[in-house]
Image (cartoon, rainbow, N blue to C red):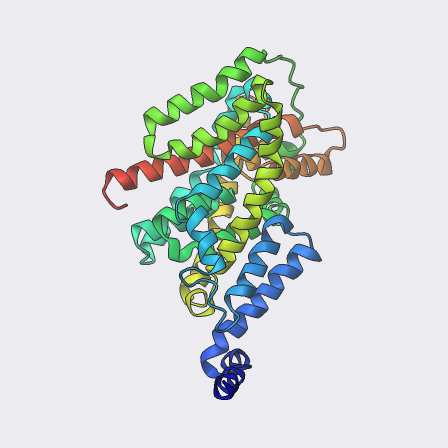
Length: 383
């Protein structure tokens, strides 16, 4: 018995010894990364609902000999029950759908074109990633960062390149929080002062409750026919929206927006953080992912604004090209950025409702882009 106790005591501190050894250097670096994520979430309030669980999951995964990502470990269990089978992102999509009012898009359906233009950067980045030597599945997972939609990026990456999940997820949510910093310089560089002060009329059409109720059903059917492999993505977001608009399942709608979304976000963040173990995360590939993700967002913004300039010219100067920047999926942050930039040059210019229409179009566009890529890759037999 005494010998067993001595043997057990001799194991104490072995984790600290390994951490501060040469072999433990990657884990030590990742502990600092975890601290940085926690700092951004707490002190700077950068996407705190996800960065705090991710940061703590990263901390847990990099404690030597903790083995939380081994078979049966806590983080591995969360990963297997919600990410490996894509359940967590889909549950979050139900909550997102329950929170979105597509009425502003339905009042001016042409704004859906801005949502389509805002996805061009995804496909340009896909080509660049292939050119840099990433595999087809890795390139798709990296390019989808440009969707500016965390759950979409997680869903696609968990299917195509799960070994990149930590880097893609952190990049997607970090850049989404930085939209108010990334987009304005691009918007200013690509537009003239005359274009930035274009005023757009108020939206006067009223969308009937029946139209808003039929919209999620029609979108789900169209998506299922065009890109059936992406149906889980579009189907869950439209399920949430249908529950919102039908008005007879308020308890389910509220639970999807709050309790379910909150619990799933916690588990999702911890599981993603668990994939950020030092030896797997600290690679040149991770730096390339962050660089390409940033490029994807910039290209999306450029494409959206340039499309806005084209529409402005075609319409005879009745459309403010700044609206194009809201075509990405960072809802509703991108719409607010457009409003702020518009009022910076004209205090009485109110672009928010038009930008919100483009922004909800971007939400649909990003999910549709992911759905198309899922269907194409699965049709090619790559997954």
